[in-house]
Image (cartoon, rainbow, N blue to C red; front, side, top):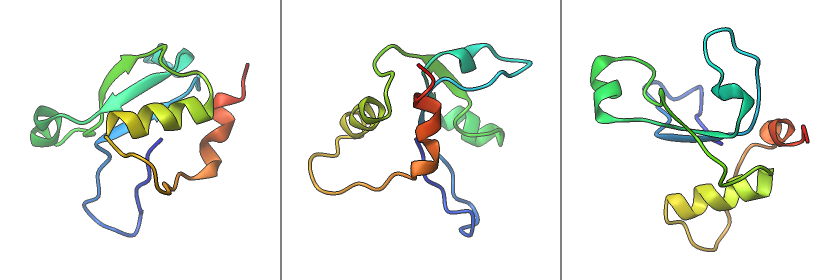
Length: 93
């Protein structure tokens, strides 16, 4: 999950939690839940910042991915907003 306002130039995703999606002709990580992370190196190189990819079994459902993300970025309680257009990635099982 990530939320980047397209109308804010220079916005980048530092962390994105994805479910299964794809297929993709170059990468097979799309067949698994995975986390994209930005690193200082990718930002400095000018490539897509969150291009470091880690396959995970920490979540498989949308709510589990939200809980994982919130825990990872140390957000406790309160309201968090996530676009609902990403739910379909988690409803394939």
